[in-house]
Amino acid sequence: MSQFESVNELIKDLIIPIVVVNCFSIGFLIKNSIPSIPNNKIPLIVSAVGILYNIWLNNFEITPKVFIEGLVSGMASTGAFELLKNLNFFT
Image (cartoon, rainbow, N blue to C red; front, side):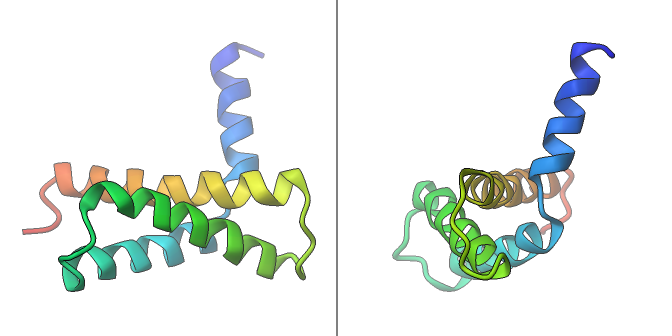
């Protein structure tokens, strides 16, 4: 197994799609409806939301894996937004 394949496996194991979608939605709403929040604070907000949401999904079990999954999924939502923005999905 190459190093690239192991990174893909790691990312696949850590990203929780439902957390990504919810964090994306929250970040998008914040960006477009609360202009007083600067754009550079949105990743921090969605990361925190991702952690809390993943803890909730795991019946309030707080483990390092649950914490990291929420954090990575929250950050993946900002990456998804940037990808879509760079593909001119949002006009």
